[in-house]
Length: 287
Image (cartoon, helix red, strand yellow):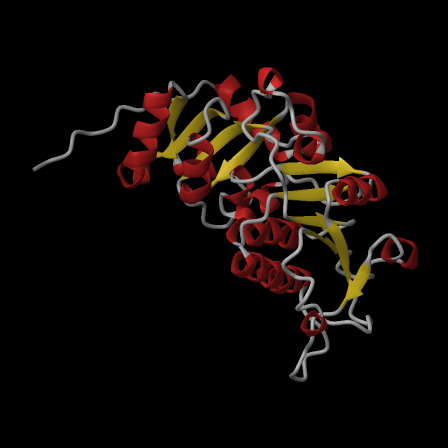
Protein backbone atom coordinates (compact mmCIF):
# COMPACT_ATOMS: atom_id res chain seq x y z
CA UNK A 1 0.00 0.00 0.00
CA UNK A 2 1.51 3.30 -1.09
CA UNK A 3 1.65 6.25 1.25
CA UNK A 4 0.37 9.59 0.00
CA UNK A 5 3.14 12.16 -0.37
CA UNK A 6 3.36 14.95 2.18
CA UNK A 7 2.43 18.37 0.85
CA UNK A 8 4.89 20.84 2.31
CA UNK A 9 4.82 24.51 1.36
CA UNK A 10 8.10 26.32 0.88
CA UNK A 11 8.93 29.04 3.40
CA UNK A 12 9.34 32.62 2.24
CA UNK A 13 12.78 34.17 2.37
CA UNK A 14 11.60 36.31 5.29
CA UNK A 15 10.60 33.21 7.26
CA UNK A 16 13.95 31.55 6.54
CA UNK A 17 15.91 34.68 7.49
CA UNK A 18 14.05 34.97 10.78
CA UNK A 19 14.77 31.32 11.63
CA UNK A 20 18.44 31.57 10.65
CA UNK A 21 18.85 34.63 12.85
CA UNK A 22 18.00 32.52 15.90
CA UNK A 23 21.49 31.04 15.78
CA UNK A 24 22.56 34.36 17.35
CA UNK A 25 22.09 34.77 21.09
CA UNK A 26 21.00 38.38 20.81
CA UNK A 27 18.25 37.45 18.37
CA UNK A 28 17.04 34.68 20.69
CA UNK A 29 16.99 37.11 23.59
CA UNK A 30 15.05 39.75 21.67
CA UNK A 31 12.47 37.42 20.16
CA UNK A 32 12.04 34.85 22.93
CA UNK A 33 12.44 32.13 20.30
CA UNK A 34 15.06 29.41 19.80
CA UNK A 35 15.92 26.55 17.46
CA UNK A 36 15.26 22.88 18.20
CA UNK A 37 16.99 20.25 16.08
CA UNK A 38 16.39 16.52 15.78
CA UNK A 39 13.43 14.15 15.83
CA UNK A 40 13.33 13.49 19.57
CA UNK A 41 13.63 17.13 20.61
CA UNK A 42 11.11 18.36 18.04
CA UNK A 43 8.65 15.64 19.07
CA UNK A 44 8.86 16.61 22.74
CA UNK A 45 8.47 20.29 21.89
CA UNK A 46 5.35 19.56 19.81
CA UNK A 47 3.82 17.73 22.74
CA UNK A 48 3.68 21.01 24.68
CA UNK A 49 0.77 23.13 23.43
CA UNK A 50 1.73 26.56 22.18
CA UNK A 51 5.51 26.04 22.34
CA UNK A 52 6.38 25.42 18.68
CA UNK A 53 5.99 28.22 16.13
CA UNK A 54 7.14 26.38 13.01
CA UNK A 55 8.78 23.18 11.80
CA UNK A 56 11.15 22.85 8.82
CA UNK A 57 11.43 19.44 7.15
CA UNK A 58 14.20 18.49 4.73
CA UNK A 59 12.54 17.41 1.49
CA UNK A 60 14.71 14.30 1.13
CA UNK A 61 13.68 12.89 4.54
CA UNK A 62 10.15 14.24 4.88
CA UNK A 63 8.54 10.78 4.78
CA UNK A 64 10.84 9.63 7.59
CA UNK A 65 9.28 12.34 9.77
CA UNK A 66 5.66 11.88 8.81
CA UNK A 67 4.69 11.45 12.48
CA UNK A 68 6.12 14.87 13.29
CA UNK A 69 4.40 16.36 10.26
CA UNK A 70 1.08 15.00 11.50
CA UNK A 71 1.71 16.35 15.01
CA UNK A 72 2.49 19.80 13.64
CA UNK A 73 -0.51 19.77 11.31
CA UNK A 74 -2.91 18.60 14.01
CA UNK A 75 -1.60 21.25 16.41
CA UNK A 76 -2.01 24.03 13.87
CA UNK A 77 1.73 24.67 13.76
CA UNK A 78 3.22 26.10 10.56
CA UNK A 79 5.34 23.59 8.63
CA UNK A 80 7.60 23.89 5.61
CA UNK A 81 9.71 21.84 3.27
CA UNK A 82 13.29 23.00 2.65
CA UNK A 83 16.28 21.88 0.66
CA UNK A 84 19.38 20.28 2.14
CA UNK A 85 21.20 23.58 1.67
CA UNK A 86 18.55 25.66 3.41
CA UNK A 87 18.23 23.23 6.30
CA UNK A 88 22.00 23.41 6.79
CA UNK A 89 21.70 27.16 7.36
CA UNK A 90 19.42 26.51 10.35
CA UNK A 91 21.87 24.33 12.25
CA UNK A 92 25.55 24.14 13.11
CA UNK A 93 25.77 20.35 12.97
CA UNK A 94 27.77 18.65 10.22
CA UNK A 95 24.99 16.15 9.43
CA UNK A 96 21.59 17.65 10.36
CA UNK A 97 18.90 15.15 11.32
CA UNK A 98 16.39 16.50 8.81
CA UNK A 99 14.00 18.47 10.98
CA UNK A 100 14.34 21.79 12.82
CA UNK A 101 11.70 23.66 14.79
CA UNK A 102 11.35 27.21 16.04
CA UNK A 103 10.12 27.18 19.64
CA UNK A 104 9.14 29.71 22.27
CA UNK A 105 11.21 30.15 25.43
CA UNK A 106 10.09 27.74 28.15
CA UNK A 107 12.08 28.83 31.24
CA UNK A 108 10.13 29.68 34.39
CA UNK A 109 10.75 32.01 37.37
CA UNK A 110 12.38 30.59 40.48
CA UNK A 111 9.28 31.35 42.55
CA UNK A 112 7.16 29.23 40.21
CA UNK A 113 9.23 26.19 41.13
CA UNK A 114 10.05 26.90 44.78
CA UNK A 115 7.64 29.60 45.90
CA UNK A 116 4.56 29.18 48.04
CA UNK A 117 1.88 26.87 46.76
CA UNK A 118 -0.88 28.79 44.96
CA UNK A 119 -4.44 28.74 46.23
CA UNK A 120 -6.86 26.72 44.13
CA UNK A 121 -8.40 29.84 42.64
CA UNK A 122 -4.93 31.20 41.80
CA UNK A 123 -3.46 28.17 40.09
CA UNK A 124 -0.93 29.30 37.48
CA UNK A 125 -1.62 28.56 33.83
CA UNK A 126 2.00 27.69 33.16
CA UNK A 127 3.08 24.43 31.61
CA UNK A 128 4.81 23.43 34.86
CA UNK A 129 2.70 23.94 38.00
CA UNK A 130 4.11 24.39 41.46
CA UNK A 131 4.37 21.22 43.56
CA UNK A 132 6.36 19.95 46.51
CA UNK A 133 9.94 19.43 45.38
CA UNK A 134 12.32 16.73 46.53
CA UNK A 135 15.19 16.84 44.05
CA UNK A 136 16.73 19.84 42.29
CA UNK A 137 20.06 20.43 40.57
CA UNK A 138 21.67 23.88 40.52
CA UNK A 139 24.31 24.58 37.88
CA UNK A 140 26.64 27.28 39.20
CA UNK A 141 28.49 29.03 36.38
CA UNK A 142 28.45 25.94 34.19
CA UNK A 143 29.81 27.18 30.87
CA UNK A 144 30.04 24.15 28.60
CA UNK A 145 26.82 23.71 26.57
CA UNK A 146 27.27 19.94 26.27
CA UNK A 147 27.56 19.62 30.04
CA UNK A 148 24.56 21.84 30.72
CA UNK A 149 22.38 19.95 28.26
CA UNK A 150 23.48 16.59 29.63
CA UNK A 151 22.80 17.67 33.22
CA UNK A 152 19.26 18.60 32.15
CA UNK A 153 18.88 15.21 30.49
CA UNK A 154 20.15 13.42 33.62
CA UNK A 155 17.86 15.46 35.86
CA UNK A 156 14.94 14.45 33.67
CA UNK A 157 15.99 10.78 33.64
CA UNK A 158 16.23 10.58 37.43
CA UNK A 159 12.99 12.40 38.13
CA UNK A 160 14.33 15.73 39.38
CA UNK A 161 11.77 18.46 39.90
CA UNK A 162 13.75 21.29 38.33
CA UNK A 163 17.09 22.49 36.98
CA UNK A 164 18.36 25.92 37.98
CA UNK A 165 21.07 27.65 35.95
CA UNK A 166 22.80 30.44 37.83
CA UNK A 167 23.79 33.72 36.27
CA UNK A 168 26.97 33.45 34.20
CA UNK A 169 26.06 29.92 33.16
CA UNK A 170 25.74 29.04 29.48
CA UNK A 171 22.50 30.16 27.83
CA UNK A 172 19.98 27.34 28.01
CA UNK A 173 18.76 28.11 24.45
CA UNK A 174 22.22 27.72 22.95
CA UNK A 175 21.64 25.14 20.16
CA UNK A 176 24.27 22.82 21.65
CA UNK A 177 22.54 22.86 25.05
CA UNK A 178 19.19 22.11 23.45
CA UNK A 179 20.68 19.31 21.37
CA UNK A 180 22.51 17.73 24.33
CA UNK A 181 19.29 17.66 26.36
CA UNK A 182 17.69 15.47 23.64
CA UNK A 183 14.22 16.81 24.38
CA UNK A 184 14.52 16.81 28.18
CA UNK A 185 14.50 20.60 28.19
CA UNK A 186 10.76 20.30 27.55
CA UNK A 187 10.09 17.82 30.37
CA UNK A 188 10.87 19.70 33.58
CA UNK A 189 10.99 23.29 34.81
CA UNK A 190 14.16 25.19 33.90
CA UNK A 191 15.13 28.36 35.77
CA UNK A 192 17.75 30.60 34.15
CA UNK A 193 19.87 33.54 35.29
CA UNK A 194 19.28 32.86 38.99
CA UNK A 195 21.40 34.39 41.72
CA UNK A 196 23.15 31.42 43.30
CA UNK A 197 22.63 32.57 46.89
CA UNK A 198 18.94 33.28 46.28
CA UNK A 199 18.44 29.92 44.58
CA UNK A 200 20.06 28.05 47.46
CA UNK A 201 18.03 29.93 50.07
CA UNK A 202 14.83 29.27 48.10
CA UNK A 203 15.64 25.56 48.06
CA UNK A 204 16.37 25.62 51.78
CA UNK A 205 13.12 27.48 52.48
CA UNK A 206 11.32 24.77 50.51
CA UNK A 207 12.63 22.20 52.99
CA UNK A 208 15.59 20.93 51.02
CA UNK A 209 19.09 20.15 52.23
CA UNK A 210 21.89 21.62 50.13
CA UNK A 211 24.73 19.40 48.95
CA UNK A 212 27.60 20.95 46.99
CA UNK A 213 30.00 18.76 45.04
CA UNK A 214 33.72 19.19 45.67
CA UNK A 215 36.39 16.68 44.74
CA UNK A 216 38.41 17.59 47.80
CA UNK A 217 35.56 17.19 50.30
CA UNK A 218 36.11 14.92 53.28
CA UNK A 219 32.61 13.47 52.88
CA UNK A 220 31.64 11.32 49.92
CA UNK A 221 28.41 9.78 48.70
CA UNK A 222 28.96 6.57 50.62
CA UNK A 223 28.88 8.57 53.87
CA UNK A 224 25.42 10.00 53.16
CA UNK A 225 23.24 6.90 53.21
CA UNK A 226 21.12 8.22 56.07
CA UNK A 227 20.54 11.57 54.35
CA UNK A 228 20.13 10.79 50.66
CA UNK A 229 16.41 10.07 50.92
CA UNK A 230 15.67 13.60 52.16
CA UNK A 231 14.64 16.43 49.80
CA UNK A 232 17.90 17.63 48.27
CA UNK A 233 19.31 20.33 46.04
CA UNK A 234 22.63 19.42 44.42
CA UNK A 235 24.94 22.32 43.52
CA UNK A 236 27.32 21.60 40.66
CA UNK A 237 30.21 24.00 40.02
CA UNK A 238 32.11 25.19 36.99
CA UNK A 239 33.93 22.60 34.85
CA UNK A 240 37.36 24.16 35.41
CA UNK A 241 37.40 25.62 38.91
CA UNK A 242 34.42 23.98 40.61
CA UNK A 243 32.81 25.97 43.40
CA UNK A 244 34.73 28.76 45.12
CA UNK A 245 35.03 28.70 48.91
CA UNK A 246 32.30 31.30 49.42
CA UNK A 247 29.84 29.22 47.43
CA UNK A 248 30.78 25.98 49.18
CA UNK A 249 30.03 27.77 52.45
CA UNK A 250 26.40 28.19 51.36
CA UNK A 251 25.84 24.42 51.38
CA UNK A 252 24.92 22.20 54.31
CA UNK A 253 27.51 19.62 53.21
CA UNK A 254 30.25 19.42 50.62
CA UNK A 255 30.36 16.03 48.97
CA UNK A 256 32.85 14.18 46.77
CA UNK A 257 31.98 11.44 44.31
CA UNK A 258 34.27 8.53 45.22
CA UNK A 259 36.63 7.36 42.48
CA UNK A 260 37.94 3.83 42.87
CA UNK A 261 40.02 3.62 39.71
CA UNK A 262 42.89 5.72 38.42
CA UNK A 263 40.93 8.54 36.76
CA UNK A 264 41.87 11.91 38.17
CA UNK A 265 38.31 13.25 38.15
CA UNK A 266 34.86 12.94 36.64
CA UNK A 267 33.28 15.07 33.96
CA UNK A 268 30.78 17.53 35.47
CA UNK A 269 27.76 15.93 33.83
CA UNK A 270 28.91 12.46 34.89
CA UNK A 271 29.30 13.58 38.50
CA UNK A 272 25.84 15.14 38.36
CA UNK A 273 24.40 11.88 37.02
CA UNK A 274 25.95 9.89 39.88
CA UNK A 275 24.68 12.30 42.54
CA UNK A 276 21.18 12.56 41.10
CA UNK A 277 20.93 8.80 40.72
CA UNK A 278 22.00 8.27 44.33
CA UNK A 279 19.41 10.73 45.65
CA UNK A 280 16.63 9.53 43.36
CA UNK A 281 17.23 5.87 44.26
CA UNK A 282 17.26 6.60 47.99
CA UNK A 283 14.10 8.71 47.76
CA UNK A 284 12.25 6.06 45.78
CA UNK A 285 13.28 3.33 48.20
CA UNK A 286 12.13 5.45 51.12
CA UNK A 287 8.76 6.17 49.54
